[in-house]
Length: 241
Ligand SMILES: C[S@@+](CC[C@H](N)C(=O)[O-])C[C@H]1O[C@@H](n2cnc3c(N)ncnc32)[C@H](O)[C@@H]1O
Image (cartoon, rainbow, N blue to C red; front, side, top):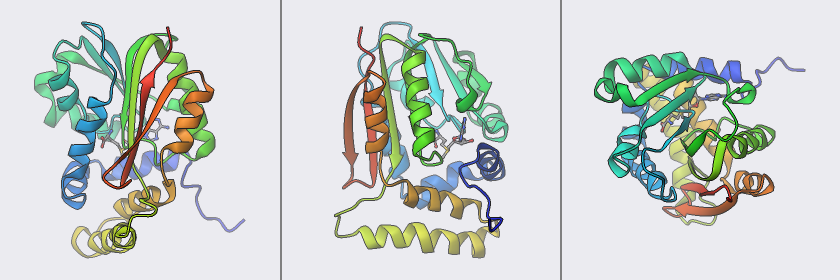
């Protein structure tokens, strides 16, 4: 044992995001050149049609970046329950950014691996950029949770930054993640290497195909998608009736 931390331990992950929460939105927008916003919108567009006055979960909700897209595309959503292990991310979200939508947003500070969300309670489940901090065994747990909490007929959509294998510009993309981001953090942000950790999670994640297989194994109808040459990948579909 060399004493290196388990970067997939939920307590470790919570620490990373609690420390990042103050600057997360600006950082993710600027250093993805706006792609994160576009991918959140595409993730919402990939959700199957929903019933009127739908309610559901935004898992690993962070600072609620997907809510504006969700409420724009589905104006009559009755309630979004945001679930996140990092209270830092959520407090910032509601206080500073989403005051005017607060009546439609509930929050549960929860670790999805020990979640007590009720069975068959969601018309939809969405998660944007919440997969990368999960190792394959944890992705399997998340897939089982998704299948359990969706109502029959309920829809889901997930998206995550991914390794664009086979894309000629892949070396540049990896250079950006593994070298440029840590350098910026060291020089401009003088941070505790937390944004660099996010870069490491991204490059280690590969893509959402393993998660797609787990969702299928749990009985869901699943479609796997690649966005912008595979720089992000997503899964969407339904729980059969
Ligand atoms: C990269 S942020 C994504 C935030 C937001 N959804 C977005 O679109 O940017 C990942 C979020 O997942 C949360 N998270 C990580 N592990 C978790 C777990 N086991 N249970 C609940 N939330 C978790 C983190 O606290 C963090 O806020």
